[in-house]
Length: 122
Image (cartoon, rainbow, N blue to C red; front, top):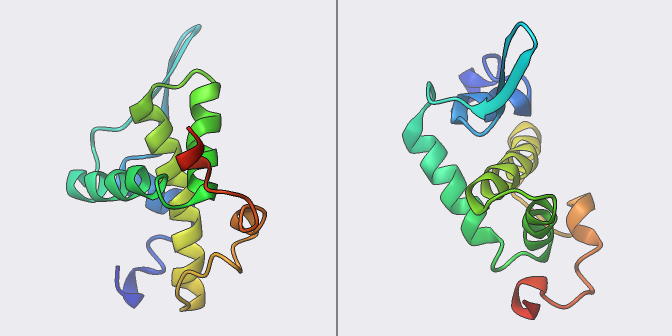
């Protein structure tokens, strides 16, 4: 994503939708169904979900996000998409600020820096 794309993707939710990890709600009459879009950049979705899935092994914050999603009854692919959406928010902020990712500055990850790696505890 180059600098000229900042206007096209003005929110992390727009990036998540483009990647195919944002939920899509379909409604008809009384029925409402939430699913994920198949009309997306599939290679980017695969890259982002692979990154998110692998990150939970090294990042206590990512492991916690994934474990909490699983505790809410989500299957592994759904929990991975939830984690991917969380990472997109973090990466988007880095993109806007022109700064590399620093877990010490990531508010949600800061609370996990002093804790043992949750992924290894399982």
